[in-house]
Image 1 (tube, rainbow, N blue to C red):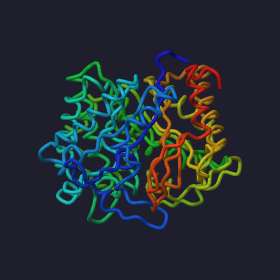
Image 2: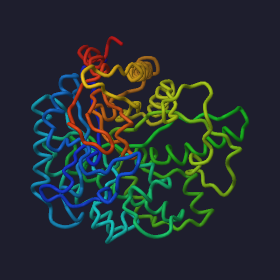
Image 3: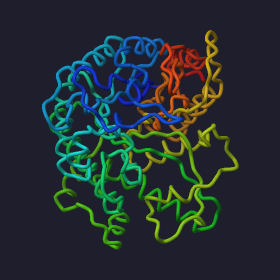
Length: 454
């Protein structure tokens, strides 16, 4: 493996930090979400705000050399567009400096779904161009402050999700109809924000690297019927290729633009926007990958737009195993994504989230035997190496997701991705103790030799 290859961990602020009301932090939209029978609230998470030194020691012990974190917008700017909070910025100074002290390279993601609540109430999130301006202001402040220590930046986490109904939950959209025009406008406004931030970095800090990120699932047709293949092609064009064309080539997909025209979708898109997008290409293509899907055109009709096929067309894959949440385990799909992305765009690719969620119970003294997680990561790392050394893909690194247990994207602490167990449940904080699992020691042994010996 390359000597400069990145092995690391990824988290978001609301899933890891806690300290929801400390040191001047403002509320985010997540702070309103209450615990349910199968989820926690977001107030404590794993308390990394107070325990980051311990967590970084664990990552260093595993021989990880990169940590992707998110800067919480509401922690550093409590209202989203007001005065900056020096105490909030100081926290990120501390954790980033602590990473560098341990030889861990920081990567910063600027937005991971947790809109400042005051801004969401005032502007209804990214449906408003004033939110775009506020986000770009926040991003520029963070870039200026941390550019001397952070070389790798992501604008949005899983930005193609703003082209799905999930957009209304993750963009700060608190009121109004969930129309297709609103969804497309929200998506376009995130594209504008991404483009403005990317251009700012390239113009002012040419030595820094900025990437765009998609949430990827490899998609297969349910049969060799042309209609199934057509459904997969159109979905991939709208959900993946469109955004990666914007990131890497500076333009919207012609098919997406034609769809907007044909269906008279009202979207805040003009010639000036297109010129901006054209000039703001990324340095690497980042993505998350956990599973693959199978699509059957029988579940679709002409009223469903291609970007929403995933909500209707998915059908079980009889050839793959799944975890307890019915997410398929498909390492070959991972290789296909890596290779196809590099073949199509010719710029470095970077999987910044990969892992498997499992239900686990600690008996109070023995390390958890999570052999299924070891098998998952071994197979996916092998697939990545095949993409690199057989297919010729240029891959910058491999980041696991939540390698120290964190809340899942739905707030479920019992869906664990970590190689380190955190002693808490959805409704009982218990000790919050960190306990390495069997997979921790497997990763440590693997990365001691830079992943050369699987």
